[in-house]
Length: 316
Length: 246
Image (cartoon, rainbow over all chains, first blue to last red; front, side, top):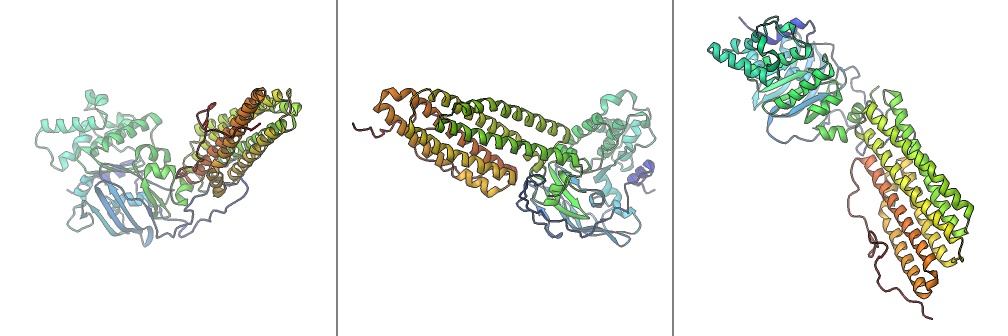
């Protein structure tokens, strides 16, 4: 039997992460230039490099440290319609990289290329090269199922299986044959739950249904499930958008802890969240990567005007 | 730059900036009037300066309140954040400028009771005009977001120091020549020091404007005249001034 862990996960939420309508809607439009104004009212501090760059140019300050994933000229087409244009991005290991941008900018599409989720969509085509540790993940020799064990994913809505808490976490290791005994499995489950910061809340009810957990607990359970198979990369697609501020804070704290072991890529609509949890930020707009750099630079003094407009809330 | 999607946010930012500009205009007038009150021995004007200082203080508090509210409610980032914090910093500089102008006016009231000291008050007036011009330039640079103009003010910081040093020697010469002038000259000396500090606040504002616009500090050392007398009042460099020969 071919086990498609992420597919079944999606089916359960009913809200699959796949939205083929997510195509750039304002294709090629270049925003108006800053007009220097004498009058103060409405005149803003000007950006030195305020010239609108051509869409082919990406303002990039490269990351330091080893690169986990290197994307080169990645384009994605849905039924011939281009959703992502020549994205080249280095994603460093043991770092949280945030992908930000308005709806339809291609950030989720790009996220999904990293564990070949686009393979599951009829009519989707990915070009370019994505290398994980110098290995092309789109190579024919790569089994997407094994790839997705190495590249785990967490979705917007928590999507536990309608099974016990224990079984949710044990499922991955069992399917991938990572454990050989019950004792070993107990150990794996405990470790994963501990790392996800959920152990203390569920230790005495591992056999109860996961569906009885709160939204925030369910999301941490899903993270525990993802890390139980020892992934190298964790992709998160708006992991907190269905959670309250306290549950969100706990997930953010968890993300910060997890980055010591994993390469984490997070798509978020909350810029405050991107600023809080990430060390690297990539800004997408209309299917293109516009600017990437250290998060503190992006949020203090971005070099590209469209980035500035977006993070300061000026996109109409 | 484009408008904020949430229009009220942009309006609030503009309001803070406008208020700083208004405060700047008031501070400028205070400095100019304080100098005039010294030059013309105008008691009524000096009193008016002292009273009007309350208004500057109120504006300062109001700008701070608005800025803190905006940070709490809008969480500004990047250029918006710099603009908000810049407004707070400039308002503080202007408030201090107002205090110094008030102090000059108070001393003008005392001087008006004594004998006129024409050549000396004229020197103060000259230095005052210079400082006023710097203040006006930097505030214009702020309101118009003109980087070059702010940098120009910053670069000419030493002119005020030179003036101060010259005045210091002049006053010292007077006091040595005629000890009866020591009281009045000391007031004039403090006035000069106050003006020098107002010049420093103008320089601070230039730095803030630069940071607000670019996100970077002004690089490079500020040019500085040799004996600056800074931070060492009331006994600055006592390098032998020319004594009056009687």
